[in-house]
Image (cartoon, rainbow, N blue to C red):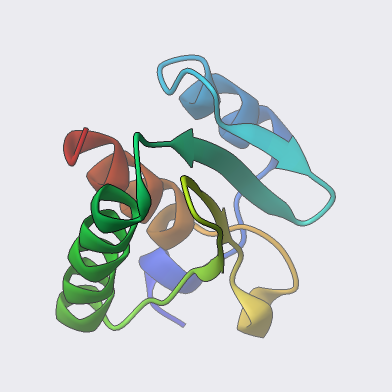
Amino acid sequence: MSESTTRVSDQAVDERLKSMPGWERQGGEIAKTYKFKNYYETIAFVNAIAWLAHQSDHHPDLEVGYNKCRVRYSTHSVGGLSEKDLDSAAEVEQLM
């Protein structure tokens, strides 16, 4: 396995999340809900995430509503969180 798909420790996750406001660890994943003014803005955000996911070949679970989107990352192959999850979440933050 490459470093990006190696499971990271809970301590390492907690340390990285300190610099990512709103992201929280829930079991074996990290998640954040983003809020928007309307459906158009929400879908534009979702499309931007889709592009990032395609580029990195690492895909989040998305829950999409009219004016919100919940983004969740985990790496199924390691049964928890990897650096790729944390890096991908940081890239999503850059969209805002």
